[in-house]
Structures are given as structure tokens and as C-alpha cells.
Length: 391
Image (cartoon, rainbow, N blue to C red):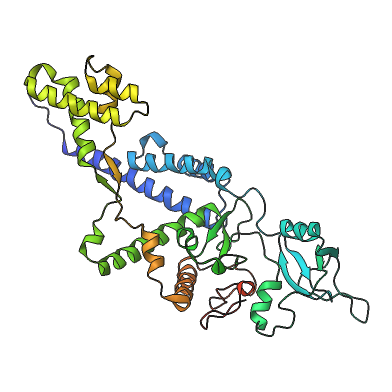
């Protein structure tokens, strides 16, 4: 006899289910707001989340499984924050002075020590004014090195005051998006997979498009960035033709796949197959195993077929990897970089990524003097190229 659930019980169960979902949604919302109010800090993110659940009177076990899954993922991510974060500050803000003790730019401590070790610079202080005070764009009592030679750009007037401000200003070791001064990740405004394929003059001594983000802001930035990269790649492959869209990085080698099938058949179904087929499969496997041998004696022993194939030899045939690299496949980052037309095309490409970063992150703590239209070339690599301005 089937049990009949009263309407009042059904209503109670429905209300409990709805209540649980509302509590879960409220807790996630409060947790997100809390993290925003804290400036994106992630030291005690999981603890704060647990406290929200306790305040709302809901145990984690009573939450829907997909929410429990997200909580578990977040805890694993938080546990790895220290591992993926930079171990030392990104900016040392050591001032480099010319022979007249005029400020040129700020550099890292590693580079400053390299200059002094080579004997082409010495530790120094800023130039004094007539009244005995020092003038600089950075705070006093900073570490400085003075070059002992006239650098190539000493008489150059190409650099604008705005560009000079970026080169000379001290950079803060904080997240450019939220200002968090905890754990940091080095973020490439132009995605690293593209940057590595650009000509050397767009990478060497060019830190303008490398900024600091905290792990949370980096994660929020990476998602739309990867989506944009995927869309760019898809659009370019569309122009290359329909075959370029569905092309796979790996293809099946028919011969290796046949060898694998022969090995599996000899292991599982030898007794049920015709003798002729068994002999043919055995011969194909032996030829493959012989081709893998380096010594002639081993090859002859396998090909002669006086002894049956051992279990290890058959297992080797069964485990053949028939998936091989497709020689016609071109990686997405290579497709994108190859599509750039000369120096002008690369400049537009870099500036577009700068605009995308600003629109997506809305950073409030960018280095002083950082601009979207700053030069994309390093001047020390040979000056301007095809009308593209360099530092």
C-alpha cells in the first residue's frame, strides 16, 4: 500500500529546500563582498567563508554538492597561493644615474650589482643643488648607482616627459588592481605565449607590460584573457579555411594502430581466430618489434619466429602509442603572431592588449607614468623601426 504524503509535509520539504538554496546563495554573496571590502586579500579566505556558514546556521554538509565542490576547489587553490606567488618583490627601485648624477631610470638590485661588478658603475648619491639639497623624482635615502661612461642615449631628445616619468618613478609592490600588498603574481598584459614569439626588441629590457596582480585578481583576469585568445585564434583559423578550424594537434598513425590491434588480438582472441590470421598478426608484430631493436642479433631472433612471442613483447605491442604529432598543425599562438604585419602590426597588437587589460581590470594602482600609448620597442636594440617609436 503506497504511502500518501500530506500536502503540509510536501510544503515543508519544499520550503526547506528553497531555504537551503537561499542561504547558500546569500553566503556566497556575503563572502564575495567581504573579500572585496578586504581589498582582495586571500590569507584567510576559507576561514571567512566557514564563518559565514556558521553565522547563518548552515553546516557545510547540508549545502548542495556543487557548492561543496566549489568550496573544496577554493581551499585547494588557497593552499597553493604561496607556491605560485613571487618569492621576492618585483621592484627594487634602485636608481641609475648618469655621469652627471642625473636620474635616468630605476632598475633591479640584480642589475645594479651586475653594473658594479663589471666596473662600469659605482654606488653613489643624487646630485646636490646649489643649496646643498638633493632633487629627484623619488623619495630620499634610496639606493643609487652612477654610470662611469656616457650611455648611448645621453644626447637623445626623443623621450617625452610622460615617458621619462615612467622610467624614473618608483614602482610599488602592490596589486595594480586592488592594491593588495600580500602575495603577488607577475602578470603579462600581452599574454606570455604571444610575447615569447615576438622579436627580441619587443621583449628585451621591456618591463612596461609586466605588472603585479594578487592571486584573486590574476584569476579573474585570466578567464576573459583566455576567452579572448581563443576567439582571436578561431577568427584567424576561419580566414585560413574550414580545414584549419577542426585540425587536430595529433593524428592516428594507421600502421601503429594496426600493430596495437594485432597485439590485443593475439593476447585475447588467439584461440578463436583462424590460423592464417594469427600467423599474419604474429608476423606484423614481429616486424614492428624488430624495427625497434638496435642489435642485429635481436632482430634476427624476433624475425625467425622459432620461439613464441613473450608476454612482455605482446604487452609492448598492445601499448603502442598510435597518436602522433600532426605535422600540419600550427599552435594558436603561432597563428596569431604570424598574422601580425610588420612593426606597425605588432605595435597595434600590443596596444590592443593594453586597452583590453585596462577595460577588464580597471586598475587603480598602475605605476606612475604608465600609459597605453607608451613605446613598444626597446631603443637600445637599434632605434625606431618602420615608424614605430622606441624608448
